[in-house]
Amino acid sequence: MPAKTSTLATRKAAARRPSGGLSPLEVEAIDLFISFVRLLGMPKSVGEIYGLLFASSEPLALDALMERLHMSKGAASQGLKVLRSFGAVRSVYVAGDRRDHYVADFELSTFASAFIKEELQPHLDSGAARIGRMEQHLAKLPKGEREAANARLAKLRHWKEKGEAMLPWLLKFLVA
Amino acid sequence: MPAKTSTLATRKAAARRPSGGLSPLEVEAIDLFISFVRLLGMPKSVGEIYGLLFASSEPLALDALMERLHMSKGAASQGLKVLRSFGAVRSVYVAGDRRDHYVADFELSTFASAFIKEELQPHLDSGAARIGRMEQHLAKLPKGEREAANARLAKLRHWKEKGEAMLPWLLKFLVA
DNA sequence: CATCGTGTTCATTTCTATTTGAACAATTTG
DNA sequence: CAAATTGTTCAAATAGAAATGAACACGATG
Image 1: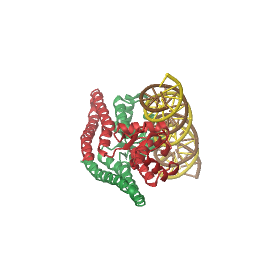
Image 2: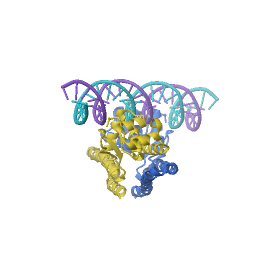
Image 3: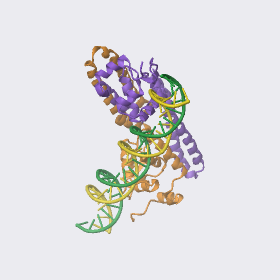
Image 4: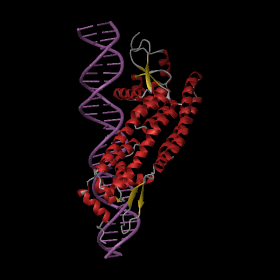
C-alpha cells in the first residue's frame, strides 16, 4: 500500500469537504475551544487543534491538522505537545500508517487535574515562598510600621490558605 | 499651603526611601501581585499598582504611583480604572489635597465576585450559545454521523453544566 | 547505506497586547 | 477668566507572545 493512500473513512470525509474546508459544526467547536484555551492563557493554536480533534470522528495526523487549520508544521507540533502534556489528547495506532494519529480525550477530569498541578499549584507555591520572605523583611522593620504591615501580611496568609483549600476542592468537584 | 507640599506622613516615608525607591517588602508584594494578575490575564501594570497600594500604609495619589513604579501617567490611570472596576481599589478623601488618593481594598470576596461576573460568566454564556448553534447544525447532518456527533455534544453539555454549577460554589467558597 | 517520510526544535518573522506621551477635558485657584 | 493642576483618552511606539519555515534528528524503507 503506497504511503499516500488514505483510509476509506478519510477519503469519504474528504469528499464532503473539498479543499480541506471545515464544516459549520467543526468551526463552532473550534471557536468554542479557542475561547476556552485563551481563558486559560494558552495560544489559540492549541484551541484550534483540540477543537478539530474534538469534532472529528476519525483520528487525525499532523498533516491533516496542518492542512485543515492552515497552520504550520511547527505550530501543530507545539500545540500537540501541550495537549499531550495535559492529557487532553492521545495518539492512537492506525494500521499501515507510519504517522502518529491523535484523538481528543474527553475526560474533563484528567485535563483539569493536569492544569491544576502544572499551572495553579506552582503559582500558589511561589506565592507562599514570597510570603515567607515578606515575613523576614517584616522582622527588620521599625516597630511603628511593623504592626500595620503585619495586618496586611495576615490578609495574605489568609488568602494563601483559601487558595490551598480551594484547589483540592476544585479538583474533586471537576472529577466527580 | 502650596501645591507641592506633601503631608507629614508622606514626607517621613519619603525620607526612608530616597529617590522614590521601593522597600524590599514592597518589591515582594508587587512581585506577588504581578504574578497573580498575570494568571488572570491582566496587564502587569495592574499588579504593580495593586501591589504597591497593598503594601502602602498611606493612600497614594496618581503621581506617587507614577514616580515610585516608573510608570507613565496613562498606564497608571488605566490600571486604576481596571482596579476600580473590580472593586480592588477605592479612593479616599485626603484633606487639603485636590488629587484622588487610592487605597487597596482587602476583601477578596468583592474582587472575586467582580471577576467571576465580569470575566467567567460571559465566557460560560457565549459557550452555551455556541452549544445551541451546534445543536442546530447537528440536526442537518446525515444520520450516520449524527449519532457520533451527538455523543460529543452530550459531553459539551455536561461540561457546561459543570461550569454553571461551579461558579456559584466558587463564589460562596471565596466569600466565606 | 542512501533516500524518504515523519516529527521536533529553534531562530526569525509576524502579530497582538501593553505602554508611552501628548492632546484634551474638567476642575480649581488666584 | 487666565493659568495651573489633575486625570482621561487615544494614536503611535514598544515589548512580548505566537507562528512560520527551514534545519535537524530519527527511524523506516528499498
